[in-house]
Length: 358
Length: 111
Image (cartoon, rainbow over all chains, first blue to last red; front, side, top):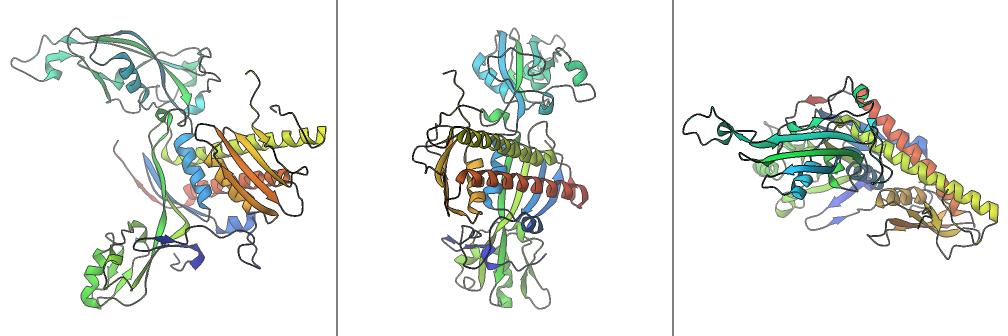
């Protein structure tokens, strides 16, 4: 990887301030330079590279886009990629110590494994529930004493039967053609079966019907498909003056582990370009008078290190494409409205126009 | 009440030829606002572009566009939206390409 970035791409990190934060690649900013939008140029400069992928999270680099674009994707991931969550709870019986509304709230937060692609949005919250927009679960549990409990035991799991309401107690009640739709896919239920929702004692019971619908994170955080979706800028470290061999280890300790390498023979320090991304940019090195003038800390303005953790039915690698899809849908809706507005203005002759929806 | 809210409308004070206008886009936020502002600013014919969320409890953004040479800001808006869509497509393709062909670390995470 090249270690030299164009100075215009760097954001300066000082001891107490940051500078050169805003991007300057706009037409008219630099006389004689063309910075107008050019798709071909953008394609050439764009680099996307997946770094790590697990069953729950993904790390990737998005290089060559403006912060406004990267931020749009991040915001969409958190607030506008749809998921399925429990929205309505019909309580037939609840004699547990947790009151209905608190328990209902807890139920809503349980992540479900239902792929949102199978479901439609309810156009209005009071719409009739259908097999296309609602998934129904039943919960029925009664706590009793365990007659076979060992003598002298004080462990509730030995003393009682059903002393906890767990997410695994959700029983899917297929309606309409749901049975065939979900054939071959995991049975609708929680992604994690071990979430404790309420504790019970003998004689207490819970009986409820749960309705799960499709929603987005901006309506309620329970619909957010991600645990975190964040990015940071790639750190870039420039050593301007040689570091005295006697201080090499001190210097190394100013950075995150692995960022600075010391040549064992010469005690010369250098930046490990593969590992600079690990640096936390703590600026410790700038607090040291002996080092402050020898090093320049920067970040690369258009080099985004994304980290996305899924907490939903989506696999981590699917989340980003879903966010792009949502973004493009938004653009197309506005585009349609702009076209309609234009047609309307041309039809009536520009001026006072009565606005109606397209 | 029953009247549907328009997705986009031109606020009072726009130039008759729309070379300068403020557009109010309903049900949008910084997500589209900032991205669209950036893409409009990439157009050399745009003299000025800025956006605001006038109030956090009103679900709208105002996008102000002023053009050079008395050009139509509505055309610039259309072009910016098209460019933004191309950008999204390019980013998505690059991401999927990397997912398909690049080598990367795979690991197992406990939940």
